[in-house]
Structures are given as C-alpha cells and as structure tokens.
Image (cartoon, rainbow, N blue to C red; front, side, top):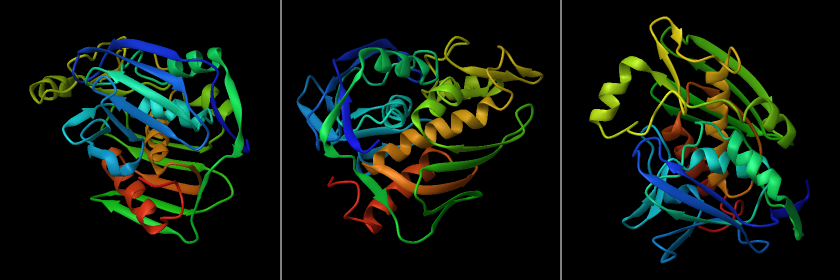
Length: 278
C-alpha cells in the first residue's frame, strides 16, 4: 500500500472493558488525509493524536490521554487499524476503556473490513530509522533495526503451563487477519484475585480472555502458540503510536506495554522528522 487510507463509513463498537468492567463504546469514523489516528474523549472536548507521548499508564494495558482525561486498553483496536493500513480515523470514545469484545482484534478487523476503505490522494507515511537501537526493561529487551518491511520476531517465556513460545511475522494485512487477529488476551487463574484487588480484570471472563489454570488453558486454544501471537498483536498496537508505518525489524524478548511505549517514545525523539508531530 502506498496511498493513505481511511474508512468508507463510521463503525461503532460497544461492550464492557476488560479491566474496568464498565460498558463503553467507540465510534471509528473517516478522517481527512494527513490527520492520522486521533482520539476524541469527554464528549469531544478533549482531542489528541494516537502518539507515544500520550501514554500515561502501561500496567496490563496501554492507557493514553491528555491531562486528567484518559482511555484504557487501546492496543487491540489500534493494532487492527494499523495492520489494516488505516492511516486516518477519528476514535470517539465514551467510557473509560475500549470495549474488550472477545479479547482479540478479530471483531474489530471484521467490522472495519465490512465497512470498506477509501484510498486518499496522499502518500502513506513511513517511519524509517538509520541505525539499530536497543531498549531494555529488566530482563525484557527490544532490538529495532532498519528494514524495508515491518517484521516482528517475538520470544516469550512464561511460567508453566504456557512456557516458552516464539513467532516470526512479516506484518501485512492479510497475514495479520489470518494469523494474528484472533489471538486473545491471556492470564493465569491464580492471578485473577490479585488483579481484581488492584482494580484490574474486573470485566474479564472466559468469553473475552484466554485463562490458564495449573493444567493448561480453560478454553480451547486457537493455535498452540496463541499467547505469543497475542503479544505480537499488542506490540503492533503499541507501535501504532509511532504515528507512521514502521520500516523496522523488531526483535523482542519478553517485552510488554511498558517497554513498547518506552521504545516508541524514544524512537520518535531520536527521529523527530518521522511519524508526524505530537
């Protein structure tokens, strides 16, 4: 894809949030070329671009906002929009969190594809880098290198029964829809009580999350390595906050939202002529 792209018509998503359990909705609408992905919150009174500078929290989800106005768990919807090549859209959000739907980005993809896309008379922006960079957070690491394509190699390592998983993906729309979009958010049954005490996972169910007990998944897996595929889904959503399609090869070892946000912020600072202004 070389031309910028927006939606043919608005699409509405409604449902509870994974962490708050509170019902909300987001309307994704067409936008002019060159305007990027933008959030509108508080009945349209607060508007800001989907950029790494607006990340305010990364504990178990990516939360972005401006001032005191925030929206949580943006990564799955941003992942779908980004992977489908949608450069310009307005995301009008009512509620504290993007609806979790089934815990993946598949429902977002289906609805966005069903409404159709419109190519726009402006070249698609790209985020190119001229040197490798390394980002660390404890034992997690991201290595990014210049590339002609957006490629992600992800090594995950979790306690049993998940264990170690690896997936290598050149990110393009058809592959994403077929091999990544249906990978669900996940967690351990023994973590649920602690998460809820911390005000997280209040809307989580077996219908919108892949939960593991001591013997294995409590619902059937979509793939044997569904967990690492979801980690790539999350990374794509977090890298959407670069503001342009990455010409970047990413090697991830156990990375999560905090390291993704750190990398996106530092990449935007290191290459200020890429990805548009904040």
